[in-house]
Length: 200
Image 1 (tube, helix red, strand yellow):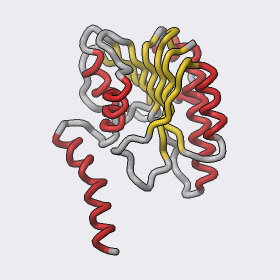
Image 2 (cartoon, rainbow, N blue to C red):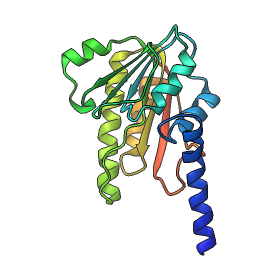
Image 3 (spheres, rainbow, N blue to C red):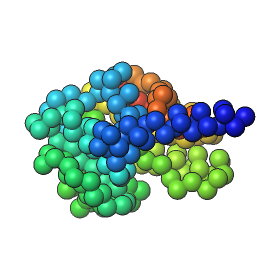
Image 4 (cartoon, rainbow, N blue to C red):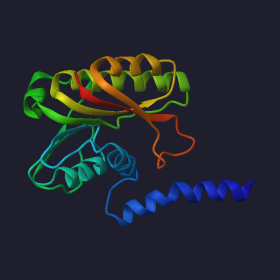
């Protein structure tokens, strides 16, 4: 049993070590990389909005995909200190209560909107999934008004009672939708990604 636990720990640490080697602030970058490799959502010159962007791994990876002709905008409650290219902009704000000024600064007409947001967990599966659902609803609401027709949406959600309701909402807004669990997600994690393709 101890050998199995040690093996599991090594598997989880593999991505952490790799992120450090690749100069990304967190292992979560490989989740977006898997999504991008499969669905090719971000293209050169695209405008990308990253909701809940701290500590900055998704920002940095998205920037490698847009290139310097694109624009990557990130928003998070926490200040992000990672060094980013000149075509990446970062703002501090609350996704759940964005004011008109922040919306104006952030802009619109994004090709891709990303959300890797997760709530502060309590240990209660019901509470955590409900909080995750609230964040996802906020992200989808922003996608409705800030995403171009034909644009794409990636959103992390904790599986729970509200999962089907949220996936149905994505189905309505997009021509196609996918459910994806990256290999780099921790095995015990309840997180899963819903991907909307071709905003109506």
